Image (tube, rainbow, N blue to C red):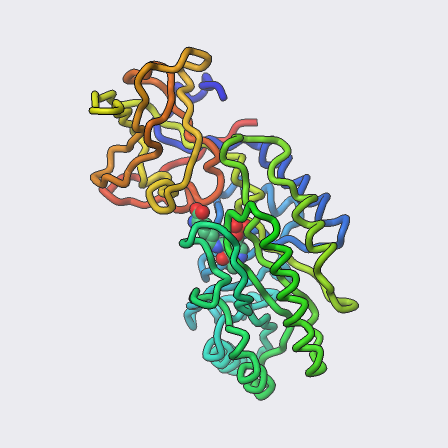
Length: 382
Ligand code: LLP
């Protein structure tokens, strides 16, 4: 990556997004999905930057939302209402009403009580809500525990042992129509065997419904496909073909069932980097500190999940590695405000430009105003 001339005028830090990298990922995902007649809903939570959403709308993807604001953002960005799904364990009445007013495709429901509330609200509006049951399949995704969602101990979804009761109640709720089954086991999943295990569980659960003469119109397998943080902007990563082919081989859909996915990170992770400048270099005991003008307020993933992002000194590109390693940190008053420990970089000095790579997903969108810092802006390049 290079320092671009047009950046000279800009205040750091900012996110730099690459349109070509985004388009390439979207195109590869679309081709691999369409070949199998799979439907992809982009998970807005990964990044809701306006230009990025525009590209995704133009590609014809649907939207996966987890808050009323995300549903609103999806509607206003031009996603077709009949391609919007709405998940989340804590949907408020206001959010549910908004989604009903906009006739979204489906609510992914996470508890019996939520079904009852959506039924009441839909009935009061003279509507019938399409719902999918989000079922917790108890499948281990082998990822960081903070982004594991499909184990019984997690708050997400309806546990299998609650299905009998849920189904019995659902059949009495006249303002609901059972449209699908929904699953999402976690995020940044790089061991694809987890998805194979998911298929096995989904097949069992589908049989359970079939035994009760129920064949929902769709099955939604969620998202979670991980990316390679060691290879920023890798044009062949992630392998959408390998991912979808697992479901093609191991999932046993019933005739006429449509198959849906909710990919976030895999579509947008590679297209963004956080660009920052070095404010100070300070001697430390084992390592020196490189203090950036970006911190955990702009990219919280390293602080929150001990996530690895490659760090590059753009101003010293191609120069030999310095004898002493660096702890690359931000300006925030927290010791967890650290982008990388003992990082190998060329001799680094005040004013150098630094890129923190592979920050297109769960970067800008998770920014905060802690320490009263301003929200980080975005810049696009082609
Ligand atoms: N569907 C549901 C119901 C989800 O909860 C999520 C992500 C997705 C789809 C999209 O998953 P993806 O394809 O992006 O893995 N902030 C964390 C990631 C949290 C993911 C939350 N749910 C991070 O920075 O790693």
